[in-house]
Length: 477
Image 1 (cartoon, rainbow, N blue to C red):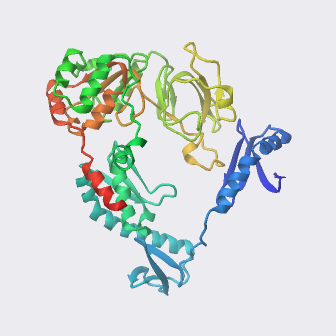
Image 2: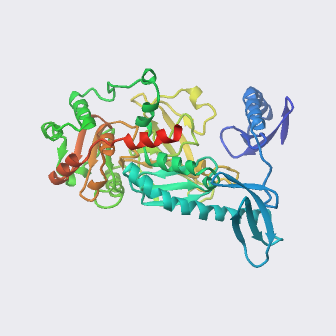
Image 3: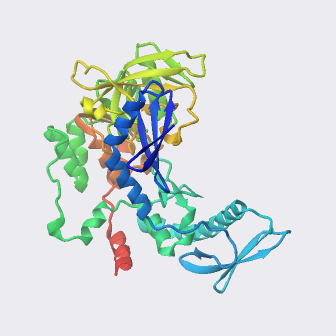
C-alpha cells in the first residue's frame, strides 16, 4: 500500500506490531511507515501528515549530501591509498588475481568475467592487508605514548565509525576504509581509541571557555568526598583514611551476602570465584523468587538490570540505564511466535508523552514513584526488521548484581562493593580506581587483601597527559 502526501510517496507496511514507526531511508529518502495490522488507514495518514515537516527535512538532508558514482573497478577510475590518488588500470587475467601500485597507477588484475561485487570484495581484502601492515608498524608507538597495552586488534568494514574499542578486553577495531585516508587519520583513531582526551582538550581552549565542576553532588557523605579528593591527588594519607572509615574489607565469602537495595559489586575480571559471572550467578540464586528460563538465560523478579541496547527504546531508555525486574510472563513458549514479557521498574519518571510511539507500554508507577514499563522479547526475529541490534528478539538488558568497573562509568549507587584480587591488581590504574570509588553515594566497601591494598595504593598515580598534548600540538600546527 502506498499513499502520496504533498508529492511524497510513502509506503505503508502493516505488520504484527503494536506501534507505528516512521523511517526515511538513505540514499534517496525513501519513506516507510510500519503500522499495526489493525490500524485504520485514516489514522496512518494523519500520523504521516503530523510528521510531514520532519520527513521533508530528512529528504532534503539526503538530497544535499555529495555523492559519488558507484565504482565499477575499471580502467580510468580513481581510488586512494593512504590519501594518495591512483588511477585504476584493469588488466584481464584468468589465472591470478593481483593488485599493485606503480607510479600513479593502481594495477588490478582479475578475470574479465569478474563481477563488480567480486572486484569490490577483492579490493577490500587488499585494503585489509595494507591497513594491517601499518597497524603492526604504528601500534607499538601508541602503546608507548599512552602507556597502555592492546591485547588484540582486528579490522573490519564499518559504515558509521572509523574505529571502536573494548576497554574490558583491551581490544581495538579499525575500519578498513582508513587505508584510503591519509596516514595521520590512522594515528588519530589509534590515539583516541587509547586515550582519554577530555583533560587534553582544555589545553587547547581559552581559560574563559573552561567551566570545571569542583563540588561533587553525587554524595552528601563528607568522608566519601574527602576520599575522592585524596585519591584524585594521590594524597599520602589515603591508607589511613580508608582504614579509619572502615572502607577496606578482607576479601572473603561475605562478598556473596544478599544484595541491598540499589547496591552494585564492581569487578575487573569476568571469570574466577570473585569474577562478575560467578557473583551474578550466586546472588541471583540467592534471590528467593522463582527463576524463569528464556534461552540459555534465566531471570527473576527482583533482579537488578542495566539496559545495554540503546536503539529499541531511544531516546527514552538509553544504554546503561538502571532498572529492576518487577514482573515476568512467558507466553506460548513452544510456539515460534512465543515471547517473554518483562515489567521493569526504572529509576526515573517518564510521562505519557515520552512513551508515545515507543515500543513499550507505560504501566502505573511503583510504590516508590518510579515509572514501570512493559515490553516483549520474541522467540524469533522478525524478518522485516532492518537493524539486528534493535531486534525485538534480543533481551535489551543484562542482569547486574555485579558489573565491570568500566561498565559502571556514569552510574551511581547507594552502596558499592569493589572487588580487587591479586589476579587483577596490576590492571588497576588511577583512573579505574577513582572511577570505582566515585560510584558510591553513601556506602563503600573495598574487598582486597592487605597486600593487594598496599600494592595498589603505592603504585597508582594520575596519568600524565604531557605526551598527548605535545603530540596533538604537532598535528594542529
